[in-house]
Image (cartoon, rainbow, N blue to C red; front, side):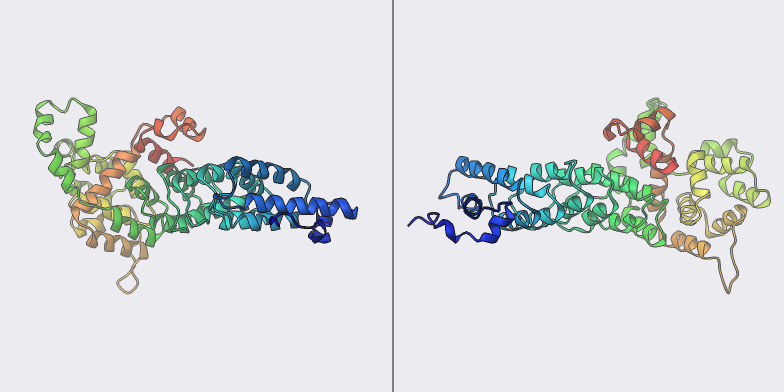
Amino acid sequence: MHEFEIEIGEAPAMLGEELGLTNDGPQRTRAALFRRLQDVVGLPSSRISPQERHMAADLLIEMLRECDVATRVRCAERISLLHDAPSLLLRFLARDDIEVATPLIQICTSFNDSDLIAVATSPNVTTEHRLLIAQRKLVNEVVSDVLAEYEELEVCIALLKNEGSKLAHPATEKITAMSKSELSLVPLLLKRPEIKPSQALTMFWWADEEGRKRILQRFAVERITLLEAAQDLFPRAAKESWQDPLVRKSLQFIERRQRNRAAAEKSPFGSLEGAIEALERDFNMETLTEIAFLSGIKPACSAQILSDPGGEAIAILCKATGLKRFYLMALWRGLRRPLGSDAEPDPAYTRTRLVFDSISTNRAQTVLRYWNWALTSAMSPVLAAKLQDGDEIMDFSVSARMSHLVFRQ
């Protein structure tokens, strides 16, 4: 006898009741059909054509629409074990109540990226559904991008913790922006291999002490390869009087020299050290602006650094410009910050001095020049509004996006 040619009476009466029938004969008939459709859908590919499998799935979906939750859960549990379940059936059950969707999304390997995106973006699903998707054994870049767009904290945390997830640039960019208000994301982002220097060095401004330490250890790098690649271009650009602003800006990022010699020749203080000594005697904005120019950075970047409550950024500025430790302390005093006592030194100054002592000049220059490049881009109100309205992120430069992220409220 064929495996599906069983007696109607073998179907359990309970299943018929769950399918919504009260008459004993019809309920058993429907229960048997429901079970056999699941059998057909689950047949191996060697025994059924794709067309017939999808026909059976279509019929099964129609019956599932009238089943109660318990029956749909059992069906989902059975379908979750299949390796080639029909896509429409997967999507139908995965967008169902969370009890129904859970076994499918957690276990089933039949989902492709398109199926998962369709489930994640369905108006009927909840954050719990997207959380289950983020926790799957493998989550590809296109799926991660869609999940990150919803900016749901628990989903983003699950993505970052999932070693089987892959994050493309849009997802890391979105989660980096979220980390400004959701600080728990910072340490998780810093563990990801996909995080870029532009994102990490922007997160520096709101990272805690440990986060800042990790950022500097990982992203404060030498520029040896860049210097070797562009070495012969410096005299050529100088011969052309630095007419090309893009070339000038890029080579300023690469070159070894940090201080602005031209500014020192015009400065009433004569040098960066002289400006710091003047600031220590008399705190005023004009001297602060002069310190920025003598350091070879823009006032907006200098203001961000000198107002940083943690102090590590001040250490980067001093080390990058070749200042001795004495002038680090003098600048700290000039900014009217507490030093503490020998017995109980100020914690912020202690951290600042530790960064100053542990980082090389070349690495500090890399960080400072990135900040100067990123934090001084032209951020017009129109551009800021466009960024907030969700325009394509690649329409704007990295520096414009990072500047907006740091300075916006």
